[in-house]
Length: 131
Image (tube, rainbow, N blue to C red; front, top):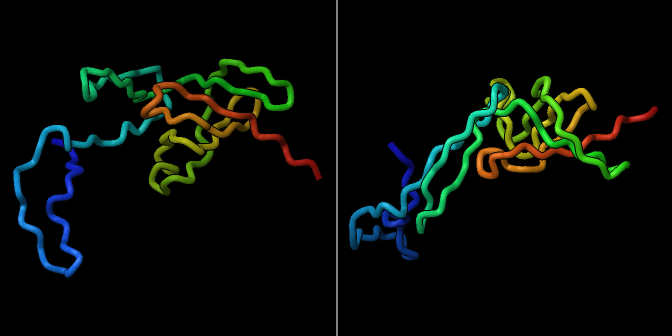
């Protein structure tokens, strides 16, 4: 089962219905989100157009954390998912997407990569607020 991204069923500017000039095509198929979760590293390989191979990250245990103040990057274990602003349901389930706040041994970091499409978790350390 897949998602279809064709636009044959849209309406005309006048508001009338368009008649489909052809059937669905395989290249118009979409795919479901990878929904990267916390766990042992698991990847899935998907064939793209032109025989290209895309890698989807299904589960991740480590992240590359970059510290903007020092300019250093370290590979650190992810302790837990704090919040996900993309979706309330993702927040509850602990799904890692771009913009997700994660807890690590270095501190709180925000994910800058798109794990479901880039197959890697890159994040920037969030500076602690001082009062």
